Length: 157
Ligand code: HEM
Ligand code: HEM
Image 1 (cartoon, helix red, strand yellow):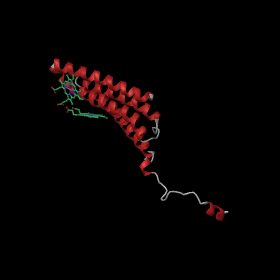
Image 2: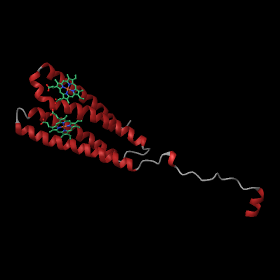
Image 3: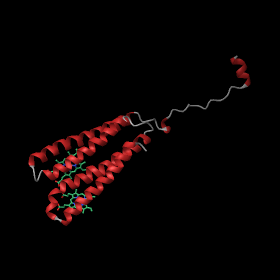
Image 4: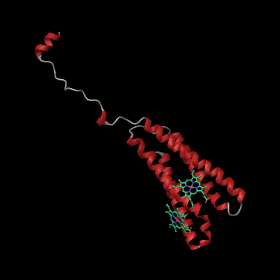
């Protein structure tokens, strides 16, 4: 399994733990429900989208029978997605206590998260551009080729 795939799958599971923990904290202490946007982005952008990214990076090149277009961009996507989401989720919390700092965190985190998503789309799209032709569409000879009869072979000489 490629390193970036493993990292995405592990990060997804870590975001599930973090998001669910914040969910339980909100359930126990309802005043913290103001942080629900942090909770839902940890779970949807963190757990769900990173799980999809990890599985897609592994499975799509195999379905298409071609290598991933750019493993380097996938590694860069991993960093952008995780740093971006950490900043975005912090921004969703900090904005209730320090509006300007919160806005900066949201802006930078949101831009990084979006850049990661665009990188994922570009990389998988370019991979599909090189998808192998399925065996059912391979061209077959119209008629089976029969060996020449002995008499025809003599004539051909
Ligand atoms: C142990 C698991 C979880 C707990 C205890 C939990 C708890 C909560 C709580 C307390 C809220 C705030 C509700 C309010 O506005 O008063 C909330 C909102 C939300 N949760 Fe969770 N949650 C959990 C798991 C999940 C998961 C797995 C997802 C998605 C994959 C999710 C998605 C959401 C969404 C989208 C909202 C926002 C709903 C809205 O804006 O009205 N939660 N959750
Ligand atoms: C680049 C990635 C993303 C950015 C920068 C982003 C940013 C935001 C922002 C700024 C809000 C408004 C929050 C508020 O002020 O109340 C929001 C709301 C929301 N986002 Fe995202 N988001 C992103 C990706 C996603 C994804 C992938 C999902 C779901 C799969 C999602 C689901 C939601 C939902 C359900 C709300 C409404 C929350 C509510 O009002 O309770 N977001 N998002």
